[in-house]
Length: 198
View (cartoon, rainbow, N blue to C red):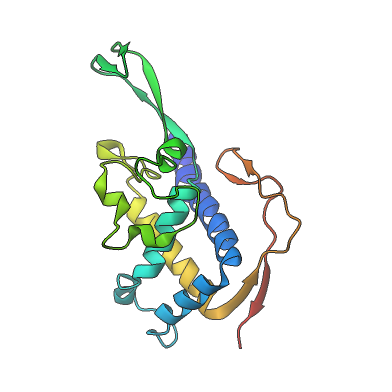
C-alpha cells in the first residue's frame, strides 16, 4: 500500500502542483510566453525527444517554478549520528525536519528570492550551482527523488504541448493563496481558459 501511495502522491500530485504554478506564472508574464514559443519554434510540429534537451529557457522556467512553488514545503529525516548545529546538539534517534521553502527563499543563496526570475539559473549567475543543496524541491543527496528526471521531462512535454498549441489565461478573482493538502495548490483550485492557437 505504501508504494501505491508514493506513486500517486509523489509521482502525480507533485507534478500536478508544479504544472498548476507554471500556468499561474506564465499567465503573469506574457513576454516569457513569447520567448518560450520562440524557443519551441525550432520544432515544426511535435517535438522530438532529442530536442527536449535543447530547451534551455523552458528548463530554467521549470526550475524556477520548483524553487518558488515547491510542491511540498519540507520533509522529515531520521538522525543517524549526533551533530551540533547553530549552537544546538541534535542526538542520534531524533527526527528533524528540513524546509524546502525556507531554503528556496534564502537571500544568502538567491538574488531577490521572492521574484520569479528563471535567468537566475543561466550562466554566469547559475545561483543554484554556487551553494550545495540550494535547489531541493526533489530532495538532495542519496535521498533525492528517484523520479526527478522523469518529472522534469513530463513537465517539459506538457508545457511545450500547451505553449505550442494553445492560448492560456488564468481568470482574475481566484484565490491563489496556498493550500497544503497534500501538496501546494491554490486554495480554490485553478481555473484556466484554454483556446486553440491558430
